[in-house]
Image 1: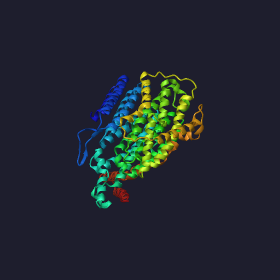
Image 2 (image 1 turned 90 degrees about the vertical axis):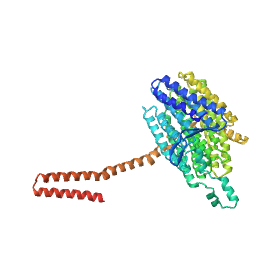
Image 3 (image 1 turned 60 degrees about the horizontal axis):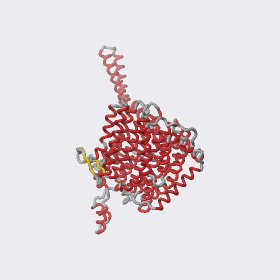
Image 4 (image 1 turned 90 degrees about the horizontal axis):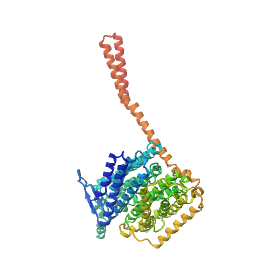
Length: 625
């Protein structure tokens, strides 16, 4: 099956959805059908395909630069594409209920379809040009989805903030990919990796024959390691921005101003997870570039622990899940940074796969609970899981998976990330040891805030809320996702992800760490919110993201605005002064000529001539200075 078939249905659904956006029934049917067909095609290809299939479009004629515009599918890409399509289908079906009264539901459904198509394009892209196209379209769609309720100033501000922060980081992303493509004289991903990869076998053979290392590097055509490191760091900066990692982490929590289904899509399977896919494609280069690995590893390590602490102290449970996403994406990226060359990036991709399942389940369940309770604040959501049995099951399974409890899908992937970080810590000089230590600490904090979330939603029952008139489709979505979260770890039996075996030691360590986090959360008791007991003073600061938004304004926004005012002043009062002076001199000379032509008295004429000379002289002095 050609890889283009995985992208085409959602592109068509987006185009046709715009045409019928005023009819909610047609808009919903097209949206669900487009993602459903994509899911079916991805599953069929995943089951039947064993190797790599490449699809081509006509190449772009750009001189010496080859732009083949290729897509490729293999079992790992198909697994990721399948989970993206699954989450998108769940979001589209759920949205038919959640946004039933929204007068702009048609636009929302079409945007979700385009968003899904862009993420799928990044997943199956084997060409850097197509990667950039999908990457930027996702950024535009996220702006539209976060600001969907644009009548609210907070939603408009959150959308603009997300757009600006990610666009700034994308400068590095685009520059890095352009540099890699220019060095390889091709945008084909395989050609780029081959051109910038160190020819290890050639170098080893040359050194073994008696050549010096410098001569071997020159003879084998080894790439400029410094330039490669700079370009990869630029790509990493773009990934950090898109994935809401430090120092770009603050925009994702504010993105909760968008509808809950949009949050589920952005946080679970698109946008923030796209960077892991891109870096997995460039992994051979990243593994051979210690500088880029350290930048990625340190940023991911700081982010995963910081975001986990902020998640525990949030007063709003939807924002708690947002900070949880920031932390979990950092775990994916940390696995890629820490993995030694022989291990590969599949542990990070496996966690991406599992995170898409349990995080979409939690977001959609919280959306239902918020409708029943009338808000997303922890105080409003107390006991809201009692609205329906599926909510109790969804929250139990979802938070178990988020905490990393063994056997459920999140626990399975977390154990493999820990094992990969350990391999990186003992194998080479990469950031594996840092990632490993911080990951253990983060796992404990994650278990603590997962316990807190479950207690708030289930144990603090005050009055049984109503189910909110939920449709069978929305209920079925939660049941399906709940079952997949329980049994999703069986994906390892397919052999899709090339990860090693997890030892009993790591299994016991996971249980101990999770148990420690649960014990800390339970110190607050079963009848109170643990954050009210353990993090009361931290909560106001956590709700503000530790004031990072104010730092953005002081260090970035205000200096840029002031610089813009200075530039505007120079443009209007200095540069334009010469133009205005010329105009004044021309008018004065014309007026003098008219007076002379009409035969004014000589003394008056001489005075006018002298005045014109003085004006022209002043203009000349200004121009000379």
